[in-house]
Length: 171
Image (cartoon, rainbow, N blue to C red; front, side):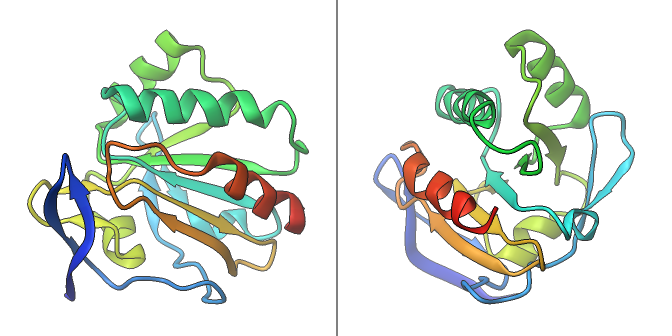
């Protein structure tokens, strides 16, 4: 598995990313994650829909909380055809609890805790923490990656406007 340094920091401290990084124009890896009810969620099932994949370290942190709430709020202004998934290493039970408490009804949370398949396939698994780094991927209807942002400092929020513009262009 490839290791990459010099891409992200946590509170200014450099961390290592594991996995194969994807690029704009690549086919989005069709990994299987866990839904809040422990059912399999295969990313290949979203082919035919524009998709925002928001990778976050943990929903139980302030920035991840804000990010997922923001995408949930923005979803109201997007076509119902656009899917938004937040992917984290949180347990599905914790994701379900967090969604219920936060009133999340448009964004679907999915867990990568079991296999770290998403983190490895998209190149966003943090070696030192076994968490996902903060990143946003926009995938078009054909399953091709149209936009990527790996946030350099994981305590910062992503560029929401850029991600939303990217998904609107392919919707």
